[in-house]
Amino acid sequence: MAKTKRTKRADGRYEETVTVGYDEKGKPIRKHIYGRTNKEVNEKINELRISLCKGLDVSAQENTFSAWADHWLSFKRANIGNSQYTHYVTYINYLKGYIGDMALKDIRLLHIQTVINDLYERNPNTNKPSSKKTLKEIRGTAKQIFEFAIDNKVLDYNPADKVKIPKEAAEKEREALTNEQQLWITEMSHEMQTAAMIMLYAGLRRGELLPLLWTDIDFKKRTITVNKAVDLSCDKAVLKGTKTKAGNREVIMPDILVDYLKELKRTDILVCPSPKGKIYTATQWRRAWNSYLYALDLKYGKNKDRKTKYDKRYKGISIDRITPHMLRHTYCTNLILSGVAPVTVKDLMGHASIRITLDIYTHITEEFKENDMNKYNDFLKNTVNNRSEQPDIPA
Image 1: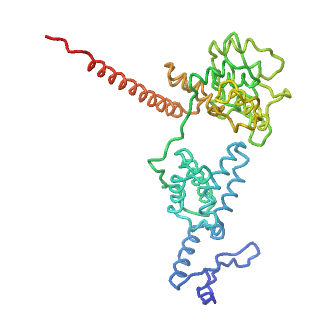
Image 2: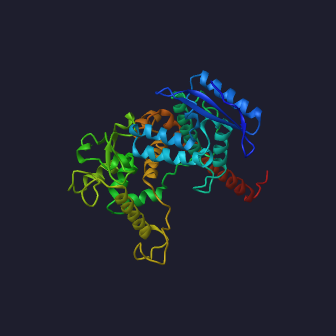
Image 3: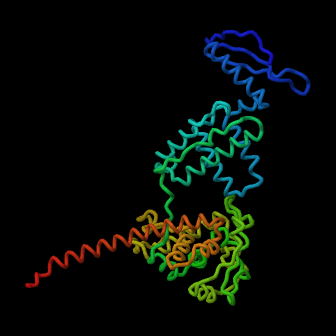
């Protein structure tokens, strides 16, 4: 590694130029080393020498995290769906807010841990603490980006490897519909009722529901065959395979869903077509679902005297917002509470791993255990109070 004479710059820093290699034409590739002291310059030259000995690409080490993350994402793009791509963009933007301008070679464990710790305290997008799931996803994305640098001989270590998620980080709450809300779904007729009924009583994901055909439903076997899905993240329906291999499944329908579907008039190939008879786009779905929520609010909410959803006297809806994922989670909750075995729940839900099912199982059983204990405590209090009010019986 050839070096030139060290000089002192006008800004007070020391500079030394070193030759780190030669290009295809035999011209030297030079790198400028700067430091506030001679000692700092020497340390940087030693680090550079070690990197060269390890065969690392010292030029690529100067890439900022932002540039390298974008490079990784473009490499990853061909093998992921639009939805996953959108998630990665979100996680990378969190990281860029802290280390985006830093060179890859300067990023350490402390920098990544600071990102996680700060987002645990407050997520700037929600103004609330980030959930444990979000923090794990951000850490996982950082790990993949730096692993990509290792694979390409840019780094020889992964600064995200030993990043810890705070133990106190809250799990993302999974919400199930109340019995009253489930009754709303079965009672009120609407263009979106069929979609809601299938998600509530068969647990299909929205992406699995939209391309569902009538030929996928076997009324003799009382099953729904799930073997395809759509990606709506680009505002157009892109047909693809199910989320995981386990997503290909047969779901056994309960009586309430079988009876409901048998009564429908089948005028289309699709079970839940858009008003144009095609698969919903993201915009069409959002408008239709919001219309459904307003209709539910008009019938069951506090603002029953509003005439339309455009009534300026009211803002938003008075009922709690219901999402497609909440319907799917309610299906899972009902299976568990009715005593269905976790392995069967896994198959019906299309979970890739039994661990996912067991996490939900544990969460639900713990929640209801606490509710049951509260009922038990109330019972004991009432029993004690009743005893104290009774007159003593003379011996």
